[in-house]
Length: 151
Image 1 (tube, rainbow, N blue to C red):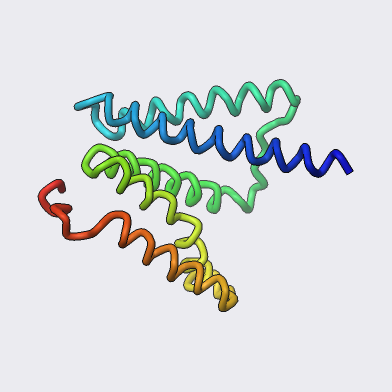
Image 2 (spheres, rainbow, N blue to C red; image 1 turned 90 degrees about the vertical axis):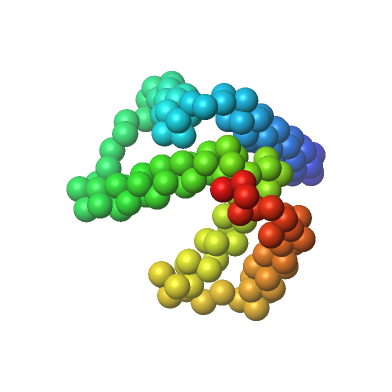
């Protein structure tokens, strides 16, 4: 019985550490000043690449992409790069709190796009969660409060 409780505590600790590290990343993006967004993206991805390579080398796990999956891998890489670039742009040009709350909406966009693109059927509770999340984001960011002046 002790194992599930310790896993829950470890999970909570990892989530808190992740949120803290992402907030630090946003802070350092803002503090980096007039460095171009794509240069910030490059260095962020370079650090992530090094960390992933170290983990894969230590686990003796080769990087293999099946021949039929290259198209999907390139689409995923392009979408990820675009997402990071837009997030960094938002952090540079909006209040950090607004950029962070908009970034936290990504799981809810996944529900919307899985319905539109993959034709998956979302449950009523999921749609309620999407509506509540977007309503909460509206209350937190207060659109129209000088947002256009900051762009």
